[in-house]
Amino acid sequence: MLARPAVRALADRVGRASAKAAARAAIGEARALLQGGAETAADPVPDARVLELGASEAAPRLRRVINATGVVLHTNLGRAPLHAEAVRRVVEVASGYSNLEVDLVTGRRGHRSAHVEPLLCELFAAEAAHVVNNCAGATLLALGALAGGGAAVVSRGELVEIGGGFRVPEVMAQSGCRLIEVGTTNRTRLEDYAAALDANPGAHLLRVHRSNFAVVGFTEMPEVSALARLAHERKVYLLHDLGSGALDPALGDYTAAQSLREGADLVLISGDKLLGGPQAGILLGRRALVERCRRHPLSRALRVDKMLFAALEATLRLHRDGRSGELPALKAIHAAPEELRQRATALAVKLGEQGLAATVVETEGRVGGGSLPLRRLPGAGVSIAGGQALLARLRSGIPAVVALLRDGRVVLDVRCVDEVAELASAVLSAAARTGEGAARPESATLEEDEREV
Image 1: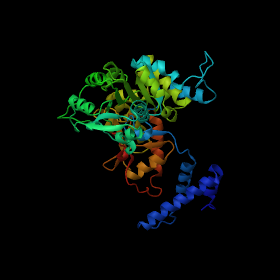
Image 2: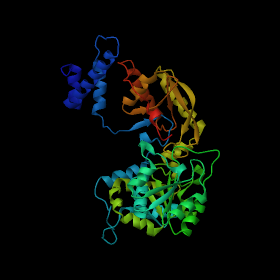
Image 3: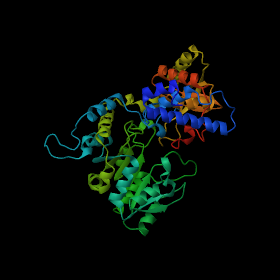
Image 4: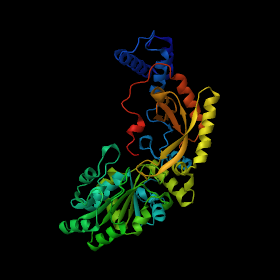
C-alpha cells in the first residue's frame, strides 16, 4: 500500500507515520466488510479512502465541529462556544506571561480568582466568589471543606446522575461527607429535612438541581427560603448545587442571585451553560465559607489556568456591560423561528445550486447541558438523502459536521450554524465522497449518546 504513488504522495504531505496509519485503517475497514459478506470490489482498498483517512489522521484530534444538531449546549460538542472577545483574551494571555498570581499594585502573590471575583460578586450579588474547573468540582470542594467528616441531607429526588455516569452520591462520598437521604422521588417536605437534622445534629443541607430531567405531576419540594430558615435555625449550612449559571431570570431558570437572596449560604454554578462562557465551577456566597473552600487542599487540585480565567473575565464583562445577547449560546437559544427558516432556506438553495436535493423542514431544538430540560426550541433545518453513510462522512470531514438522522435522512438543524456557506461546502464535499467505500458500522449515533438532553 505504501508503494502506491497516491499513498507515497500522501506520506510526503502528512508524514510516513500518518500515511501508514491511514493505510492500516483502510485495510482494516475492507477486511471487516469482506468478513461481513460484502461483495468483493476490484480494489477493496481504494486510494481515495486511504487519502481521506490520511487527512483525518493528520488533523488534530481535538478540532472544530459545525453543530447541526439543534442542541445549543451540547455536552459532547463542548457546550457554550466562546464570544470573539473571550477568544481574543485567551490568545493574548496564552501568548506570553501574565499576572496570574501576582498583584501588580503591591507586587505580592495573590490568588487566581481575584481576577474575576469582583465581577462575579457584582453580577450575582454575592459576598465572595471562587473558581474551580467545573461544577462537580465546586460541589466536591464545598462538601469537603464545609462538611467533610460530617454529613449532608439530600432529597431522594435530587440524587441525580450527571454526564458520563457520575452520580451525586459518589461525588459526596469522595468529599468525605456522609449522605443522608430524605423524602421520596417525587415528594420531599420540610419536615423530612427537619427530622433528619434532629437525628443527625450538625449535618448540613444540600440542594441539587435536577440535571437533564424534570419531575412533574404529584410533586412537592420546599422552597430554598424555607430550607435556608431551617438551616440557620439549626446553625448549619445550606449548599445549593444549582448548575446552569443563568443570570437572566427571563430564561426561565432559577438564578444563583435568587438563591443567595433567599438565604443559601453557598451556591455552585457552571460557567459553560447559560452563563455562556468557558467550562468552570463557580462558588458564590458568604465570604467566610468561600475562604474556607479557597484554602482547602482540594482547591489546588481543582484549580484552573490562565486561559480559562481570561475567557471567563471577558464573558463576565459582556454580561456586566449589557452585551450578553452577543454571546453565541444565548443568541442561539433566542433565535427566532423565522430567522432560522431563512437560514435553512439559504442553505437549501446553496445545496440545490450544486445539484443536491434539499428540503427545508421544521425542527425542535434543545437548550442542552442539563439546562431547562422541558424547554423546546422551534426551529428549522434542511433534510437530505444519504442516511448513516452520509452522516459518517460529515463527521470525518474538515471541518467535521455533526447532524441528525431522522427516518433515514440527514437533517441539518441550522440553529447553531453561523456560516451557511461553510456548512454547504462541507455537506457537498461529504456527499461527493459518499459513494467511495461503505460507512463504518456504528452501535449508536452521537445524538443517541447525548445524555444531557
